[in-house]
Amino acid sequence: MKVNNLYRLEWRTIQKTKAGKAPPVDGLQEPTLTAEDEKKLKGLRKKLKEIEDLKEKLDIGLDLEENQKKKITTEAQVLKDIEALLKKAKIQ
Image (cartoon, rainbow, N blue to C red; front, side):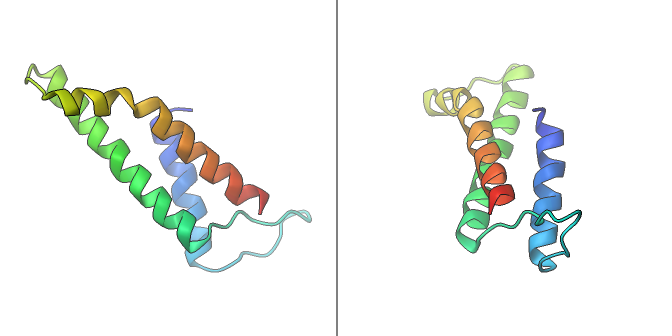
């Protein structure tokens, strides 16, 4: 899933959660996030943003420190974690 699409899906899920539970559509319950999951999601979004910023710095030719290079390698796992939280929200 592309990052932009993931942000949109995540944003819609969070907005529905903040606004309260929406009425079920066709007998299905709308996705909701617990407060703990929202906090995790916010942290993961922050990590993803930091990774994107580091990749931009790398693209323009700036040298990165070793810990910054390691952070870039965690992008796939961060995306998987975000998807897992969103799937969990749909199941609940």
